Amino acid sequence: MTTSYRGPRPLDWVRSIKVKLGLVVVGSVAATVGAIYLSLSVGVHARYAFVGGLVVSLLVIQLLAHGMVMPLRQMVAATRAMAQGDYSQRVTATAQDEVGSLASSFNTMAAKLEEIELERRELIANVSHELRTPIAALRARLENLADGVEALDGDAVSAMLKATERLSKLVDQLLQLSQCESGAIEIDRQSFCVRDIIEDAIAEVRPINAGVRIVAQVNEGLIGIGDSGRIHEVLTNLLTNAVRYSPAGAEVKVRGGPTPDGVRIAVSDQGAGIPPDDLERIFDRFYRVNVARESGSGGAGLGLAIAKSIVKLHGGSIRAEPALPVGCRIVVDLPN
Ligand SMILES: Nc1ncnc2c1ncn2[C@@H]1O[C@H](COP(=O)(O)OP(=O)(O)O)[C@@H](O)[C@H]1O
Ligand SMILES: [Mg+2]
Image (tube, rainbow, N blue to C red; front, side, top):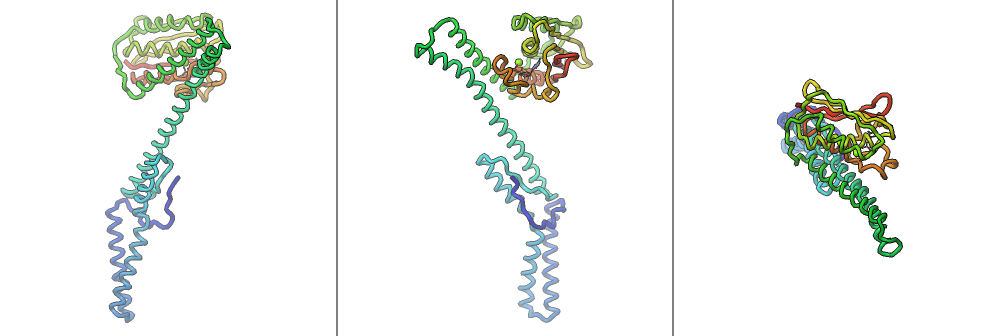
């Protein structure tokens, strides 16, 4: 919402508040002198001419100074509203002087705060939503057990264990993401063998979907620099997605090679791929391309957000692109 001020602002074009004040003073003095002179020359009594001059002076000040303090008043009102949690306030920032710059900085700040507030609300809504599913599953089972509707057999225990694992994974991921995004984690930069790290990640991910073949193609003796534990985590996240979203019999390829200033690791698969509009958004927290299809089997949509945070902490970049003829490729560039 803009608390806009209507009416003429004759001095909006002046770039300095000092010059503006000078113009107001000069304008009002000139108008006063002119009014007094005119009144005296037409024979008005000096006393009335003086009073008339004062009135003219006040009118001229009122006219010229119009809008000079209004942005400040608006800012006071807007800050009060913001303190109450209303970040929709904006002020008129048409003046060219210092107050105008302050008003436009104020608007930028208000817009940023509004965005942060929206993100915060979305985050809480997403977290609660993701927590609710496994908690509801766990609760339903426990209620059945308590009511004697269901026996405490292997099935019930493993279902409850699965829900608990999902909960703890979600909490771990959230904690990790918040640590990465706040910069609270230390990146232990050391040289590592790219082939070893890729093969370790493949070995860890292979059991998830034995029907998918994972092949590595890495330049001999390729050395990367970074926190090998964290890079391993990025690769397991990418490989888990690649095997999870691939049909049986498909192949996942991990390619490691040099770039002019570091190394590039790319994971490509032959799955359904990612629609062009979602190529950037899949790195957003909780974003899933097809929520309905994936909410049962997949994760919470945090894996790629974590991967992106880790890569960013290394000063690198990560992107998704279509793989030909089908599937997608996630490319990670790490500087040396
Ligand atoms: N290799 C892939 N093929 C197709 N879709 C993918 C692939 N990797 C990621 N995605 C899409 O990106 C979304 C986000 O991935 P991610 O952050 O790892 O979350 P999650 O795997 O927990 O759902 C996934 O839900 C999926 O829709
Ligand atoms: Mg994932």
